[in-house]
Image (spheres, rainbow, N blue to C red):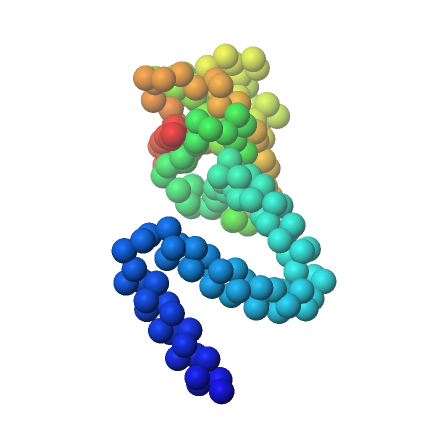
Length: 196
């Protein structure tokens, strides 16, 4: 009996597909689709109660993905190196978070690192004047308007996070990140790219 019904259904669908009248074939297909949906509905109703919770957890995952697009982690070593040579900052992010992790072991008095962002043309001046400011001031001259953002100095095993106001970047300028600890800028310097 089941085989007979399957053959009749297949024949009916075949005739509907060959029909010259498109509206009738659409009408024929619609009940078949509704029947399929209805047949699968009891399965959906018997799904565990945790299914709606899984669907709602997609919202925090989306927010987390958005947060990830507006943040990055940069590591610095005892060998006076950052682990990246470029930082990409999306213009869509009003604020961008950078976490600086010193993955070495030497204390900051001897091998401190920070992360400073400025226009490429201002880097040398920021570094030179920062050296005179001393370690207590993170080797950054007080109220230096050339500095877009800067972190505190960190030593081995320490980390710090800065928030960059992306509104401080201007189109047509080039930007860099660098370390102002005396003598480090020659090895610890990279590009900041603004992306769409």
